[in-house]
Length: 262
View 1: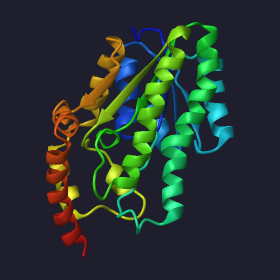
View 2 (view 1 turned 180 degrees about the horizontal axis):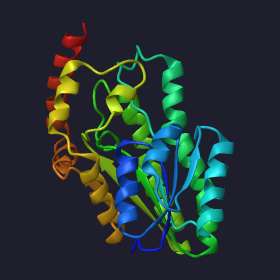
View 3 (view 1 turned 180 degrees about the vertical axis):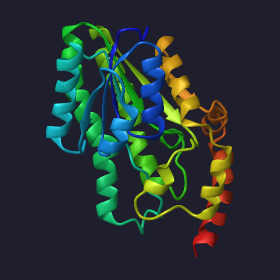
């Protein structure tokens, strides 16, 4: 799908991957609608004729306002990029239930709510694309990240089923599974910051701009799934072909994380 002239709605657009996607899509001629909680951050990212909606996407009213802004400003909605999300680092039995529920509300239910509002106008135009930003953690369950992984597994399952449901409507679904990306993700995580070893691993991360370029190229070539960085495919492939070996590798890391946190 070409991005030139397309109406694109990006959630979580005030920083990180969302802000980088806005820049990459704008460079390709897209018409943007941007939303996030941080209004100042959104204004800094926005340019030209972009529609901007600041608000909490866990609220139905904010989701509806955002989709209506895209329809009103740009005359339709061609691409929805479900990027808004939050992390949660904690052993499963210690994570506060309120934090777990807040994570699922944003990472899964807000994305689902946006899809339910975006699909009807796409169906009217007999075309469109839903881009769900998931995670490598949605392909491979990660210790200390188990509950986040569970939420992203839900996004992956939603994406795979939705792709089949919408095929006859001319609407595509692209799943994006980033690995480590140099964003403020760890700083914003619920239930506290991750162990130091995980924070240090960010030195191997790609930039948000590199991730956004991979996403934009995926849209242009009608990709089913984008994994960025590409090295993440090794872990995904290993977990599918030799799950016991992948689990042993992850367990060795987990035990070290557990000792650091003790």
